[in-house]
Amino acid sequence: MANVCYGQAVSYLGLCHKTWDCRKTLRTWNGMPNIVTGWLEGSFNRACPCGDVILKQSKPKVIRLHLANGPCLRNRRCGRHEVFYGYSVAGAARAINRKDNRIFRRLDNVIERTKKRLESAKNLTCFISPVLESDFNAATRKAMLDHVAVYFPNCRMVDNPLKKPCLPGYVCEKHGEAPKLTSNCIADLDGIDGATADLRAFKRACRGCFMQFYWEPWMNCIRGKFVDPIDRSCEYRSERFIIGGEKSCQLSSRQSLGTCSR
Image (cartoon, rainbow, N blue to C red; front, side):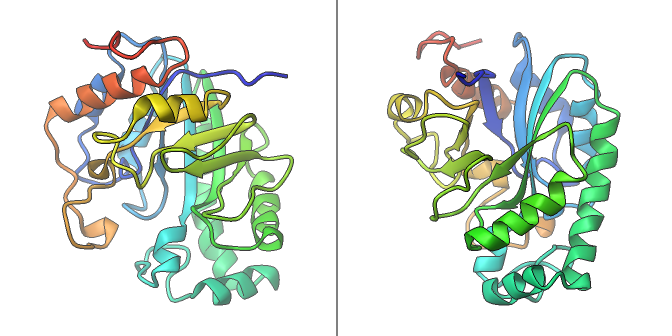
């Protein structure tokens, strides 16, 4: 069965931050029939005020959420508020595989907040990824997917390994300019600045996916050297969001490049 292409997608990973302007964000989808976006829970803020606003919009919504931060684990710089704080990749994997209470208590806190947020949303299609860009092996990722799936029976589960192959039976998410995906998939430019990326090549490389996410570094509130996500400044001009919407529109299978200016 062919994938449904949900149209323009923009990867606002930092959207939960307390300084993120949701009024400006909503301009991304002016004139669009639906809202297609995604963010990272639990790293930029425990709450997600803009996520709450988006989920209350009357338009149909397609949302991809990551629950835990794989890059911070890989680089040993997770904040105290994050699921993997104090762990290495190997240490977190051991804790998950032996069902350690501490790590699952942290994960379950994020799950409960996210579940409560999604329960009130109408016209929602949801995709849930336990870990953004995971370095875990297949068995550990499967354990996390199985745990998370119980709480989100109406959402599709997403496997997002950084380098390893995706697990069969789950939506496969890969990042970069040419992620080599064909079906049952999500593609995200995350890590490649969309302002300089070859969008035509990206669109061709993953045309069979549910979503093709447009991304630029500012969508993670990146302004140079590393700053803990919760301490970043995420204030940007409206034009950034309007351009983000135009660029993501170009990735829709229903649009040709150059027809999305507003």
